[in-house]
Image (tube, rainbow over all chains, first blue to last red; front, side):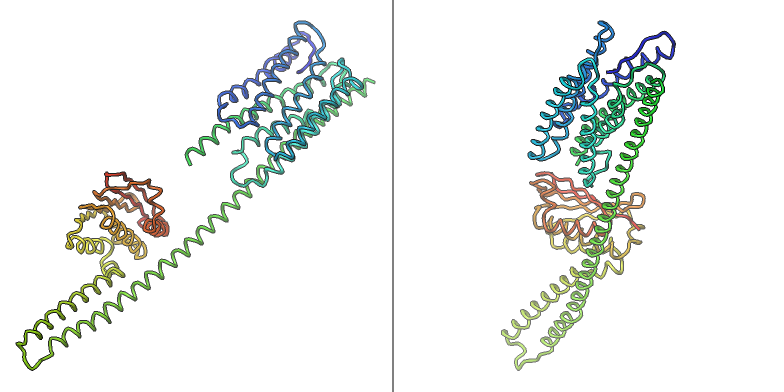
Length: 230
Length: 265
């Protein structure tokens, strides 16, 4: 969900095409791979696939509202953030035992309440929910790190053969790099070359995240093939 | 105010770039570390397998040495003593040479001693075929096949299209292959109900290939079940020890076939 300004220079056109069409369309890559291997996808990967579809839906809605109705779309983030958090935490929960899983579900509920309180008392719908998104990113970065720490002891196969590693790498890359943008987004008041660079970096990282998700979905098929040949 | 906003943008870009570098480095280190640990574990497992193989080799070697010693003892000591006993009975002169009881005793004693000598020779040969050491695998297999063919229980056809490579085969490898074929022939005689068996030696690049087949009733269970049998485990351990691979093809009523590929050198 990227806001941008419109002028007529070729650079701005390129920026517009890249951030409005190219990057949002990369979401189709993991969706195609996800549905192609749907029968082989474990539950955790189905959650991520649902998250990507939800994300694509929200992004498209936001773009339509911004471009067609020329209305502010910051409110979309207030709805999007708790759902995003819920999807990603539910993905990680699948890799832990029932006790930790229940704790993570409580965390989802607690974060949803925090998001509502943030919207009501701290950042209105007219602003980006920077606080909520920052907390969201910090918790998810911690989850990614814990996941890698847990998986580091698994010596049954190579790192790249674990589909979940690719998904987690995508999440870690996206939330780590976007954290600074989430923190300072409400302070980005002036459009210019610097804000364009930030949006470019953000959009590129988002595209990389989707590609890593697609690799993860594709690995699910490869893992299945290996177990059959054995 | 303008300067503060500009600073924020620069800090954001720096922060995002820094985070990107950190995350990519973290993931790459993580991949490297995990792959290195995996490689170390594989090396450890390979070393363990090699050690197990060495132990197995030592066990087989000492088993062969023991067989050879027992075989030689049987052949030299028991065989010689029996021959001496036969001679002694022949030389014995009773009061009445034409006594029918004496003649009957002589005949039955000689027949019994001849049978024991034959059996001892057979056991001695089975324990350690001297032909294997002197004339190589093909000759030993031919000799063993001849003995079985003479018994009339099974007709074995031995075809040797790998003469040159078989002659150069090291003795431990030749012994292992001989034991494998011996075990297969035993299985055919005991369990298959086959009337014919075929052993075909061929050369394939740096390998010797042995195709063993019979026209028996074949395996009723799966090849995996068959592999769990004691005889087959013996075959497998001997073949593993000489770095040979094998492939079984069989089915109910289709006979039994086993193909062995063994490095020639």
